Image 1 (tube, rainbow, N blue to C red):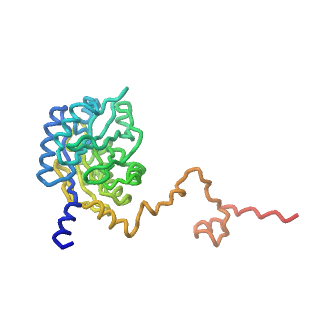
Image 2: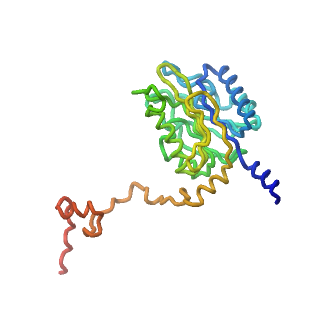
Image 3: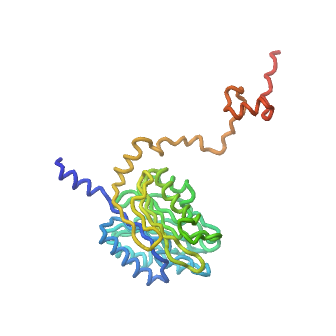
Length: 318
């Protein structure tokens, strides 16, 4: 294969990801109009995949804590999103109708139809009683590779992203409505603890699972809540390759997921090096029965000083 053919082949394997930071819409019609503009902008930027925030199709909770209008998974709004997506893979959050309470959900679509669906599993205290929780995590196949989705608080739990990675996800789309600290919001985003957590988790989850991480978030205000944006694309080594900062916008970066993951895992394959049996909670704790010289220095000193009892001597043979 010549150099030109190799470059063309590499270009086909590379995907361009758009992570979007945008305010919460006010209703479904406003949402679809805005989503249409954002998808068109992502297409002009050459994106293969666009990730919109939680609640992008209709809005997040309002200033009184009420959820947006629930949509049906097979309803006209999702069909419209498929039409808008066309040749792109698009992930977007919405309030999904449920039997008793709605779900905070995410949908992944293209012009061919629905590719994947996720219901937020972990509900923060502000959403308990408003939403019902989802039941699990699963990756799914798309034209750009195998993808998994998380919604906001889900990413705080390492088991969630790890489950998707073990299910073969090469790309994890993290859709959020993540505000500044509710208890003590900082005047500057850089000083806000919740904003720091948001950015730290994006990088940590990418590097620990060695996946491409595409993170979206709301901007602006809803009542007393302020949202910091911080949409970004992170490579499998935890490097932020594109970011919006605190303003509305679109972070766009090109990554070849298969190649980037293979390169990252070639030196230290985190998933393959897991010692799953060591993480079981029903295993007995190790007994402290080693001789002082076999213990770490602090434990040996404690035993010599009588703070840790030495093991009882074995009984003499009869």
